[in-house]
Amino acid sequence: MKYAIPTPPIYTLAIADSDEAFPVNRVYCVGRNYAAHAREMGKDPDRDPPFFFMKPACAVVQADKKGIEISYPPMTKNFHHEVELVVTIAKGGKDIAVEDALAHVHGYAVGLDMTRRDLQLDARDKGRPWEFGKSFAQSAPIGPVSPVSKIGHLSNATISLTVNDQPRQSSDIDKLIWSVAESISYLSQYETLEPGDIIMTGTPEGVGAVVAGDVMHAHIDGLGEIIVKVAK
Ligand code: MN
Image (cartoon, rainbow, N blue to C red; front, top):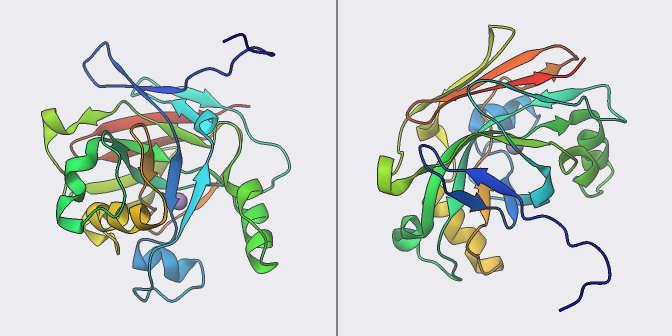
């Protein structure tokens, strides 16, 4: 095959303690999946079915414990952090039963669903799509992936984020309204999952703004920490 233009790169995530990389296909994100965060966004945390939005694979940035830098994105004055448990999918499928769902998981990582909150809320209030608020370059810094073969599955683990060493977000992934298995099962009714898909499972309460020069430490027990600085 001769391509008419240069081919886009394959976006990847490092696998912890390995030379291998995880090729990123589609990035699905669960909205309002912790009750206290739903409340702080002005919504009732009732157990409505989960909802999803997407980011492009090119939004993924490899983060690590040594620290990376991301740009402050254009067209926003309210750039928010959302620390999230990230799930990588090894095996595709459709109509996956909840009890079978974890067999499709390749691994887990710490990630940030960085959000232009002003653009997201404006879109939300106007009934428009969220893409300008959620789906932009470098909006998904994600740490190395810990494979299930090494660490098993996570059912409870502290999830937290600090900005300039000040606590901002702290919760436990056992507070997810829709569990990892339930989210995979639900999503697979609407779209056949493919190897390389990843799911960002939603953020707990305490989201807030960062400005140029701020340093975020995001942590999930068992997955380690990533450090992400907002460039000056
Ligand atoms: Mn999110």
